[in-house]
Length: 262
Image (cartoon, rainbow, N blue to C red; front, top):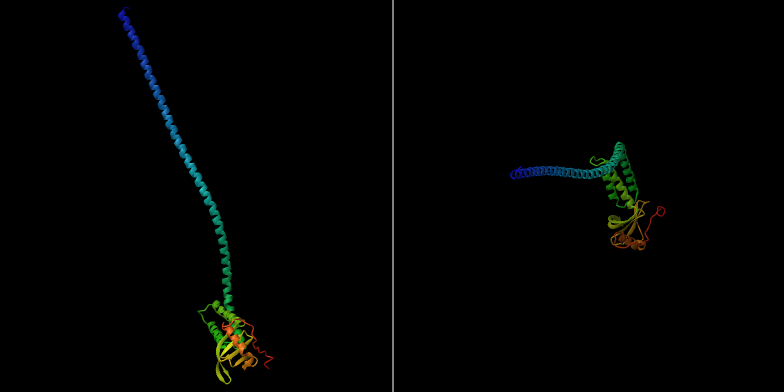
């Protein structure tokens, strides 16, 4: 082999070696790209998986909060239902009581009017037998309530209330000091006088000039004149007290007992 042929052989060998090296490099690059691609794919898959995990974690946390909220609402509903159940039981009890009351209304409607009428009759007899303090007013009150007993526009309760009110007024009359003006026949002539009612214990009069003083004698059913010198000032002072023109004080007033009037 000559020198020229040896050069060509070396060149060819070098070229073949370079080709082999170039092919190996290319093949290595392709393998690296594949490895990188696989790594990127795995990274993307891992990121996607992490996002799904984060989403599931958020959904789980939301469900836990919602569960706690619903649990509180359910507990509140249990308490509310218990309260409503108790209210319903109380209402049912009231309904039963009302039903019983309704059943008794018919009985009351039959019994109350006769009772009220009987009470009015007894009160009228009492007033006629009592000392005649404001007698005309008391008779008018009883007559008005008696007329109302026949009225259809008044309920039974209202009628009975009016009767009880009269009884209350008469009861109060026996516990107070009262005075009013009236016209009486005194000394053979009509005179305007001040009347003093000491509960139901005494009924006295005094002329406006305070010269004449008298008292009602229940046993006689008439007015009798009293000693003006003895009772003039006490009766006048009692009239002032009744009219709120003087303070309360101990007074010596005449009490005409039936035995003393004989």
